[in-house]
Length: 186
Image (cartoon, rainbow, N blue to C red; front, side):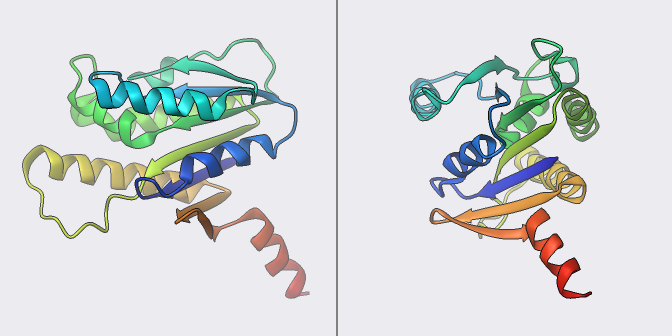
């Protein structure tokens, strides 16, 4: 099962995604951390997320680039992976020296396939940054284009797509919703 969780900054998407992972039961939980700690603000954010995960049984795997090279611990495929966050991973692939640069979209989607082969459930957090009324150019414009393509492809493949707005989940695509629609059409 593939779940995509999106929302703006401070929307509650991370807490929602963690709760979604916990809802899958006592499976092994892997947290793939993509934020490269490069300044004081990023260190604070990382620490805040560690505190949120504390006591929830997550094992952390750091992955700043090269998602398709990630090999998850143990051979147990009945595990749940939480990747946080796609926005950071896309930026890392585009701008870091060892990143994929113009092949960012293909590399990340290949990496996603790698994760899905190794886990029963994959939950991906991404940022909703596309509704800003700001005009970008150059590298930022390319970043938005790449992230948009990645998010669209993930949403197509996903079993669930949820946008978190002010802590409230808005279900755009849902396994439960699909089951309800199928049963009501009988």
